[in-house]
Image (tube, rainbow, N blue to C red):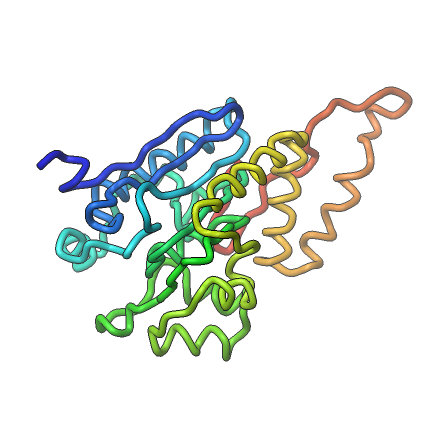
Length: 265
């Protein structure tokens, strides 16, 4: 049995200004191993630091997004409280610095459990196939969701709606995910990747520094409140005095915002 089956892998492929990042262990429902987590962080870090890429596109090979963590493989790391990537790499779950500052679009399908939900909630835009089965089922395994679900499900859906699924581990479908603001579009199964790629393509048609500045400002509003984001508006729209009377350079006037969960530009 080859490594792609036993340990899985993360694929990375350039598509113009888009970096396509694929979860690839379909024989095991794309269950995550330590190797896959390390490779996913490496792919997100490549997106962040390579100026050729302006947007990421996360998807899965096979019929399902992911059944979650392969607990037999991941248990030693979980028990030790360790992670498979270094402190200077981007966290795909967007919990720790350095944080991603380029847009990420995700396409999900079929079984999308635990870390699958957390990865999509850590993205900026999500397209779901209508055959999706979602579950944040950690409570059924005697553990707590630690990949961001307890933060973002409450942010998106409100307390009661989040607790309904966090505390029961019950499954929900794509239409429910859309109603709760976990995904932004639902399409027939098989069309989710094309639709997500279309959205990513529209993003990279825009000015990249303006896109990143917009993303950072919106994140600052979410993490620090509207006043912190509003404080940047004048700087974003008014040319510096040194350029008065002539065109200011085309650059983002926003500096990266210090975030509750870290930031990097």
